[in-house]
Image (cartoon, rainbow, N blue to C red):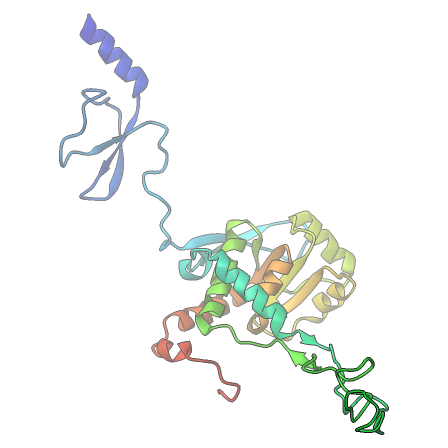
Length: 296
């Protein structure tokens, strides 16, 4: 009687189990319950997994990701195919610190400070000697525009224009792109379209298409060619939250500034080709040197 109760309880607790073989790296489904609930598995035996264990292995970062290709010839969404995305580009480990460094770099290299102060030679007036050198009982001065006097020049003050330019290391720029693309895909903010050809140049068509696809408040559309069709250029001119960009201008700051990133199939292939070359180039060590302005 006790054996029957234990057998029934094991069938309720473990109606379906999954076994993972360490030798073949395969996950199989078995319908029999384990021989004993509390007994540990012997060495070399399959590992018994509970019923609610749906994924036998974690998601591999070396597995290609897939994304739907959407149409642009109509407002209604239609899936026209699947595209495989390279895991080194679209499934990289997101480095938030490198993304932040890229954002700060892009903010500062284009910033020029116009703060400016005048030296004693540039301040108006003060040409004559204010009082005689001796006999007055006062300190000797040669000009009223001396930095020691009120209204005089400034010593070591800011001089415009002052640039804040500096160059981020090469592979931090590359990893910033791969990290941002991976984050956009993981957050479902990355969409793939056939092409940037739309049937009309009316801004309402593009506005309705964005609303129908739930592309978010701001959209960045990227294509391989820097010459965009006339229809999408005309339609996006009236929409301040839609911007067009070629692949060679894609950067971390622009991707984060826009809520949704829309890539064409040609843009995806071009980005994968260029970024994979940079990640696996033979002269990678030479790219780690100090940046020089005259560097070709």
